[in-house]
Each structure stands twice: as C-alpha cells, then as structure tokens.
Image 1 (tube, one colour):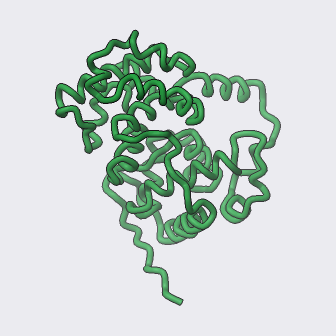
Image 2 (cartoon, one colour):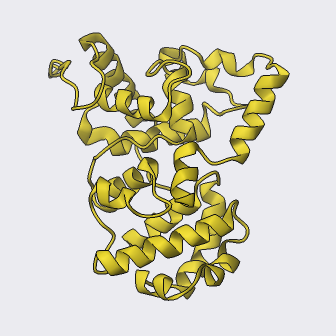
Image 3 (tube, one colour):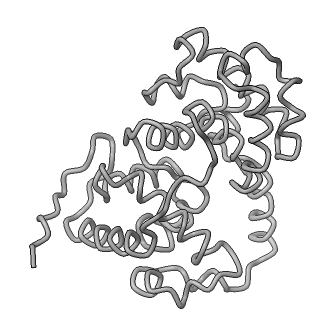
Length: 261
C-alpha cells in the first residue's frame, strides 16, 4: 500500500501557519469528502465564462435552483457580454425579477459586462484582481469563475455552506470571518484540490449537514470529523433566531459592497 506523502506545514503566502497534524486531519477529511461526493460540481447552469459570472452574481443570497430557473430566458435574450453591455439594467430586470435584490443585481450585471467589453475585449478576465474590479464581484464570485471556468485555483470558495461546515468540521474557529475562513482553508488543503473541495463541502452542506432540520449526526463524515454538528439542534435564543433571519435576508458584507460599488 503506497505511503501518503508527508504533509508540509508550509502555507501559501498570506495564510496562517498550520501544524502537520492539522493538515493531515484535513487531508483525511478531503479524502472522505471525495469518496462521498465524487461527482460534486458547480450546480449553476452555464455554457460560457460570462454566463457563469452572471449566474454567480445572481446567486448572492439566492439558491442555485432559483437562479437556474431564471437564467435560461436571460441567456436566450442576451447571448454575449456585448448584448448585456448594449442593454440597460431596466432591460435585464424583468428576467431576474424573481430573485432577491434584482435591481442591484441588474445594475451589477450591466456594469460588469460593460467593463468586460470596454477593458477586456469582451472576454471574462482570468485574474483575481481584474475580476474584483468588476461591479458585483467579491472574492467568492471570483473564485467560482476562476476555478470552474478557467481551472485556476486562486482562492477557496466560501459560501454560506462552506462557512458553516468549516466551523462544524473543526477547520476554523466559531465566529471567524469569511476572509479568515478562506485563508485557513487555503492553508489546510492542497491548492490543486481547492476547487473540488469547495464543491464537495457545498454538496455535504446541502445534502447532509444542513443549517437546520438536517440529519448529519448519522453521516460518517460528521461522525468522524464533526466537532460542532450536534449544536445545530440546540434551542436558540430569540436574539440568535433574529440574527439568523436577518443574515438570511441580507447579502454578506462583501457581496453587498460589490453590488453597490
């Protein structure tokens, strides 16, 4: 049986230092997730990089299922970045009215496509800095596009599922910011697995280790690696319930800044 290569404690630049034991545990979790979800993938329907970018902008505080219901008609009407750039936010709004914050998202789509046409010859840029310069794009969106459209692992996608599971599976401390969680995951896992692991964590969060009403206590991954899964069913205070409702209704700070900038 081949031996696993010795885990290194060297972390990517800008990420926290992790121990060999922490990285070995993370690798065992990564292997368990790969075994459990070998077909995990981006569930946003798209056929081109600009469609993935738009779908990811639309997915802020919205389910992929809802986005996938709206985008076929949207992409049939506007077939290229040039089509979106030549339209107006008011032209885009009717196609995404069923989604939350549709006016802000229509403006973000229009402005980002205009920038792509004027500054990038109509092609979605392939670097983090260039993507972050587009309206409506924060690191999560940029990481989704880079990893799934171009195979570039520039960071780790941290959506609501990854953020929840990072704490429950002992990868990050409770209360850590999205930025801190991303840096921690980048330090723990090999860079060539960042994209697939984000999908596998999201699949596990949607199918087993849910925010509420889940049955993750019976799942082998949660039994083996969960350090906070059992807390999901404890009674919450009124303040905790109110905070959760408000967080579900509002985009994250980075998403809100990107949409409004």
